[in-house]
Length: 94
Image 1 (cartoon, rainbow, N blue to C red):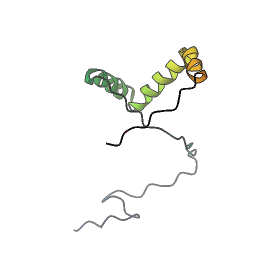
Image 2 (cartoon, rainbow, N blue to C red):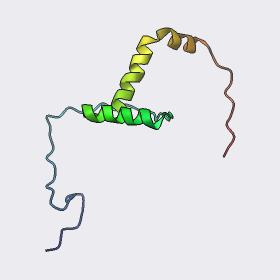
Image 3 (cartoon, rainbow, N blue to C red):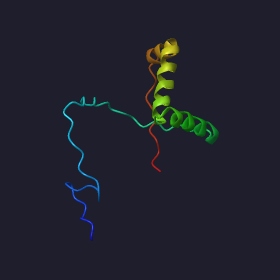
């Protein structure tokens, strides 16, 4: 027996379409910016393991760590906002 081709009404081979749940709350649209930070492989593995053991993505503990840092260092945040940097230097094209 041949499987039905995939289409918007048939997303999986043997998977029924997901029911629409009116009771689920709508998600808030939050603009996110990608953060490119370099950390050691060992630290990343520890972070990933901690996230997996808690059943969350790596983004969750990173968000918490950033929020905790900003909460615990208000003077650093205020001083960086009061100092206006000079005109930024344009990057050279690669």
